[in-house]
Length: 138
Image (tube, rainbow, N blue to C red; front, top):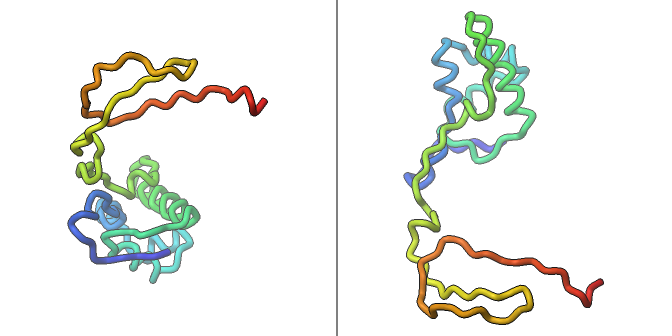
């Protein structure tokens, strides 16, 4: 498990929400450690992290189980899922629909011959590839 506490502005699109979930029901580090089976020091590190570089499925599962038990102990029948632990904000960084992509559209018929084209450039965000069986391979 790698935990990073400082993040750059460009990395703020995924936020770690453990601290928020624990605060909602006033769950202590010790309580969550007992309910999840994760060492209290690890809970503290995870709680204070703004970004999780990587986390194992086992740890994520244990956190969800422990938080669900803690929530249910306070009368809230909510089941905590991995999606509750992360907050995602789309920031358009690297989004192909916002980039200026120029391409020439060329279409081919099933027999491999070039189809008539307007010859104009078009802004596209997708490319279609037709997969046809190779008669030589069979």
